[in-house]
Image (cartoon, rainbow, N blue to C red; front, side):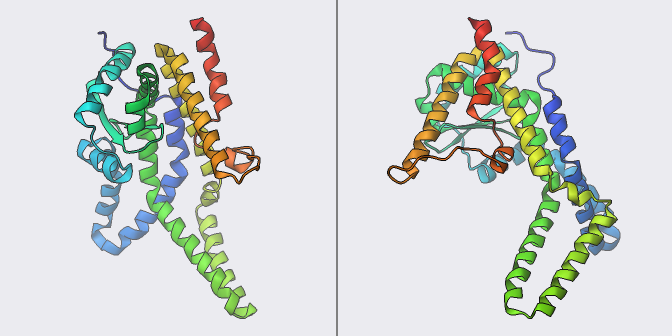
Length: 305
């Protein structure tokens, strides 16, 4: 088995995702700086600790906490490990990757799904391990390996972590605005208008002080979703380049069929399902639609023929 010199990298998708998180990071930094003022002379230490906390993304025990409590995963049973390890060895051998670097986790779900997270987590559902043929399971694992090789998993988690303080404050602001709006129903027009003026003034001053930076946060969800869809296509291409294109098509076709069946089952009798991922929902989708993924896999299928 030949091991590649570079076991992982940060491709353009991973770097682009990190750059898109910069406005969120700066807003979070402002929040942390304001919070650090409560600690007086120790405020700088609080900021430095927050900045250094991003290294926990690559800390194995912390990854275990993320897998168990955030992703709701568990360790595989001996039978599940016996099924996964030979397939994983085949996938990583084709890629020239040391498969021992990564750790398997299982999601107790009867749906077909998988996840690559943090620096070393490879999670698959119980259904995928027990029901998928070996080739299709290899395609799923090769796709998740593509996320790790390209740096998508650690970069997205790192960006999410550093954006968290700003997200929390934004959520508090939204909750406060909703309560003011509900309370204004029982107030006079003057009091309600006064509340709105004060609240609007705070927002306007914040936007002006930060040179309009908070306004960028309004378009960030769409840009991050577009980058997420790009990372899925890159992982598909990675799996296809390892020879799993036909099996990946089978997996995607199966997932599309299952999704359509679930939609029909949820509709009343005789109702026609509405088109999926239309308008803003399509722009906010984290995964490309089925036809887009098939289109990008066609060159690998044709070269195989």
